[in-house]
Length: 164
Image (tube, rainbow, N blue to C red; front, side):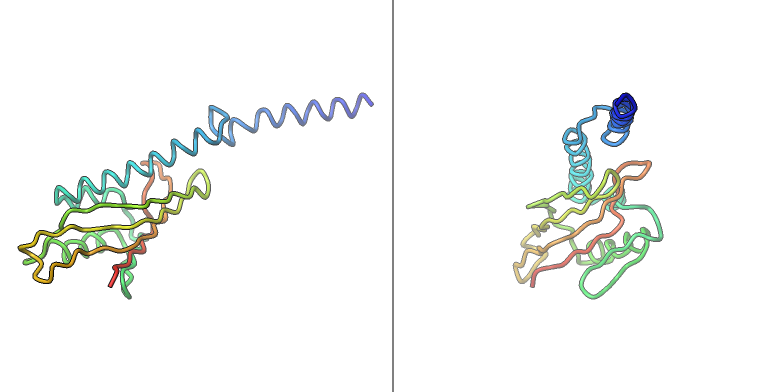
């Protein structure tokens, strides 16, 4: 009987030491989840602000600066941070092009672990009437894979589609 009591005590002690490491210093998974979601939202808010300043280099700070970054749009896959930046420049900053005003809507952040998340949402570009002869406002959906890196949360995979 005494052996069972000691075994239970040891298990309880082991669990009490494991919880703070599993869920963070506070020991509350919900608090940490909210903090991680807020950090991811901040990355996206920073991207929107940078885009609306026409600052693609700052916009790209939300992405993993690696040749392994993947960006999928339409039927094309772009691999790498620098090629993704060049793609954005060609599509939105080339002669006769405009960036418009970016908005993200209907964000859903799903934390998969302490180090990874999936984010889905809608994007909308509001273009000036002078640059778009057809009056269309580009919009669509996106799925982002985020990983928590030493420098914070970064997008490692972006799959963006445009509505027709």
